[in-house]
Length: 344
Image 1 (cartoon, rainbow, N blue to C red):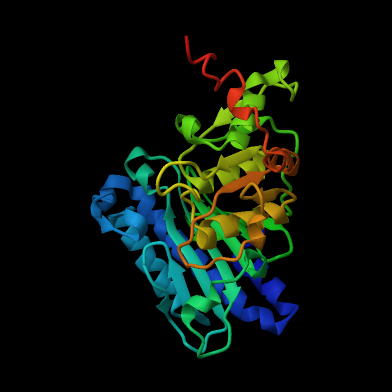
Image 2 (cartoon, one colour):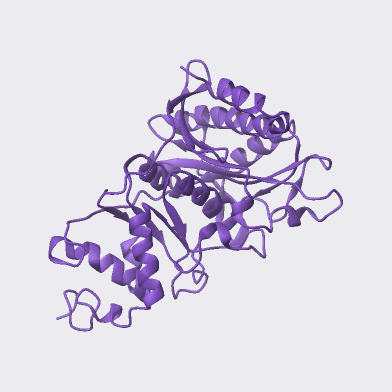
């Protein structure tokens, strides 16, 4: 069995310039293994869901959010990382001014699941650091296509690390006894035919018309234009949705909608949408905001939000097709019409 350390050593041996990136990924994995042990303790580790205050845009920060943030940043201090952007901190954190890399990080995805013993995760994106002396925020205000590596860690019944170094996607599983990640799925490719979609249906009345149209096609099943029945999934943490799609296929939709503060969705471009999009594309899938490939979006702020639709390429392409057509009758199909299944 190949450990993550061995995998990174083999990969970096081919080019000495890869060593800083390999060291950075190794540090992130080390922090994830430590965080996994705390999460596995649940309430035995204390009140992990205790609210400490608000972070960006009023999202609440919990005790485990703060712990995870400190843990990852401390680990990255030993690497050639110039600066870190984290969901838990308003401004970039300067680590090593001469560093050659920059890391965008969501230390704990799905923190509302802490008390529920439901999935939690960590997302990260590694970028090249620009010329020394430039503002730290400038390292990050670049399209996601410039990422050097990206990944996420899913803390579930077992802890998994999905990683791309720009040459495909590999999934590693944490051996808790040894505290090391071991390669368990190599060269992952997304299954195209899976008939599943993930979306928070409670927000249906707020969705843009193209999203309504696509979901209606899925709900109509074999009697609709898609000609097959679909299942729906919603796990409450984007990391768990991404893992499911990497392993089984399907599509995930978190569109912008008409609610205040949601017009560009709620996912962060730098440390949620971009790393997922990079992984998904490397596994043969696609990711978009409906109009633009996610990895082509140029951020203007470090905590910028972006709608995110990702998964099997055939399904994402269909959503983009509907957006492009701007289906005018989408809101007048049976499920959403004034006189439809939900109206008498």
